[in-house]
Image (tube, rainbow, N blue to C red; front, side, top):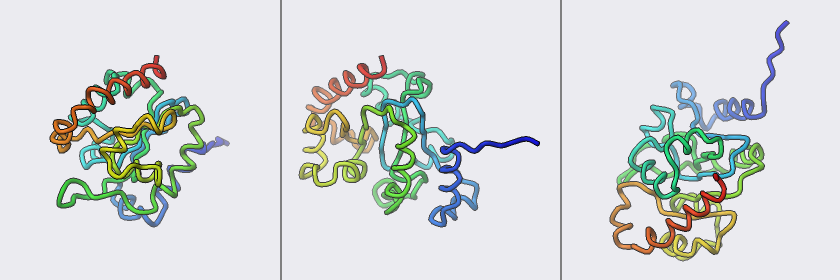
Length: 198
């Protein structure tokens, strides 16, 4: 008789699919999208998968991902295949489109699923917080008055967290208006990532 062993990671994945909050997705065959790596040392926390990511089941496979990898100083191969990068958005499903970009992640989702998944990754040294939703969830009252100030004061949250702006083309205007980000914050991020990856 064959014995099938279910790992804790697999059990959590099945529990996410079985959660009534995700019933619409599960019934239509859409799987939760996140990446848990036992040896991960860098965690990327962002808003939620894009429609494109949900369809392809591959995170950051777009111009935003190209820019993120550039900011981190990583090649595409390092990003996807090093085994050192984990990805936990605040919602594991595409939330839909709003008036300006994607809708926010659903309330209560990250509160329910991040802790048990983080417990599977004891080696994480740096949590890259991309955008205001990730920063609000993890930094809470420690945030500055707005995203720009939080990102500018990134060093205040080290070594555990590194807040940055989302690399979306929608933020190119922000980048142009805040040249200190690519002049000061990006080199610091590259150094942090290099120290961990290499």
